[in-house]
Length: 375
Ligand code: GTP
Ligand code: MG
Image 1 (cartoon, protein in one colour):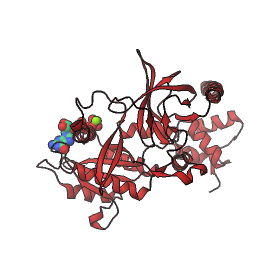
Image 2 (cartoon, rainbow, N blue to C red):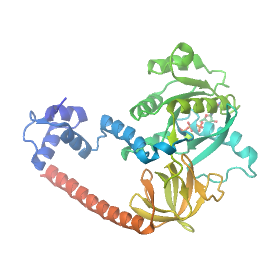
Image 3 (spheres, helix red, strand yellow):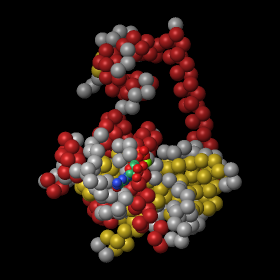
Image 4 (cartoon, rainbow, N blue to C red):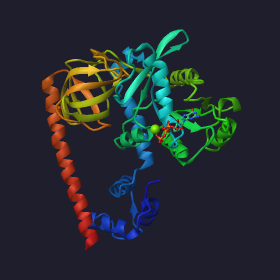
């Protein structure tokens, strides 16, 4: 299509026509509801009313993953671990499942196990005779998706959809499926709580089929694993399946270049200053690297892995806690390492100025609309 009328747009974004036309009138774009708007204008209006435009987002997300890789990387691409987020309805066992996997896979070999979380962790998995890794993001999948999708960043390679076998598909299950689909992230389903007497995995599969996920054993291509976070049943199988799905996705990056990636979490630590968990999506991050994180400059002073060990380097798909940033960036911001400190500082400065300007513009635009609405 090459456009839609103001009337159609108002219906589409579920806002009163009068508000939409007021906004457009004030901007000098349209004066009556039958006027046709082109797609970019319609999108701008939708965004001004705080509506996320799904198709635009899906496109930009798909683009973002490939943007992390550029032509110069093509000759040095190496396989990287999958980055996985967990999604699902409230109480279906997302946290229990993450904890069970972490305990089974991490704590065993580590004195003291996990003491503190950094927002992501990796587990080692034996796969076809090789030692492989799976990286889990510890943010609730939904938050990770919404916060990062808003910025058009894609960090997840695979979504684990947790569905309780005694409860079945529920509203947030459906929501999770649609989020993953919009982001073009493949879903591996964990049918959880199969230890319960009331568990009915077949009924869950039936309900998932109604949502367009057809299990492999019924001729579809959707992987579904019956598991229990309590007994630990099939957790290994789930990890295996994640690696199989990763093979289908063909995940690669170039470890031999300056690092790029995304902020998973960030906060201000009283003792240590700004601390950020960075997911490396391309290249290798090293101590001493000069980087721009969003609009913040940083020089990596120390890095800690998910077991809180100091590390010297972090390769693609690994997340590390980084010290040495000048300020606290936002989750979802991208980071990039530059060859020289001078270059990184200059870029951070100019981004900070851009950001201030666009914030000012936004403030002015919203003020105008408010005044206009009041009049
Ligand atoms: P929210 O974060 O609130 O959305 O919940 P969640 O999805 O993280 O669920 P959580 O892990 O907190 O588990 C909810 C309840 O289900 C807890 O009481 C768990 O002990 C229980 N539970 C989780 N997994 C299993 C399981 O495999 N079997 C049984 N029997 N109970 C489970
Ligand atoms: Mg939870």
